[in-house]
View 1: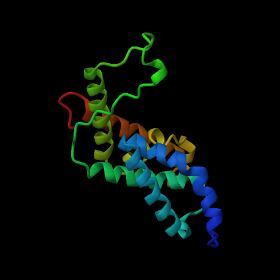
View 2: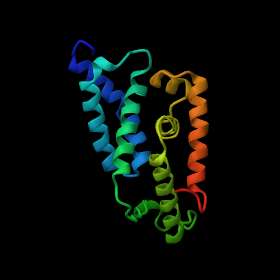
View 3: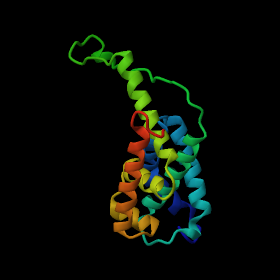
Length: 176
């Protein structure tokens, strides 16, 4: 792959695509936008292959690129109150066993999700990166340390401080 073998890179894209889209979707809450970010991620990764140190997993490096791009895209958004339509399975349409959430609950969940994404976008580096990699890209502390080149203890500290700052911003009357 590092010698320019496009087929080797294609294999890695196939392997990591679902993880990249999932991480971007968690940040953006929009699959189509996440797919756009995934495409941009792999283009950037291909162009920057020479910067990959190879001391950590390729998937973690690509996820880091995706998280940064998704956060950047999310921070440029204007606040719009969208509510996603319910996914109703035709087989369950007549069933009384699964209560459907009411519109108020859906609206509150949407507002909470937007508030969390905005609080993440408002964090300073390195807190934003560590929190996003941990909770949006599902990376372990060890993977984050390898990806960012920081000791695990530093990653833990950044994660804790980032979460505390997000909590302050999300509290009623907080900064956010």
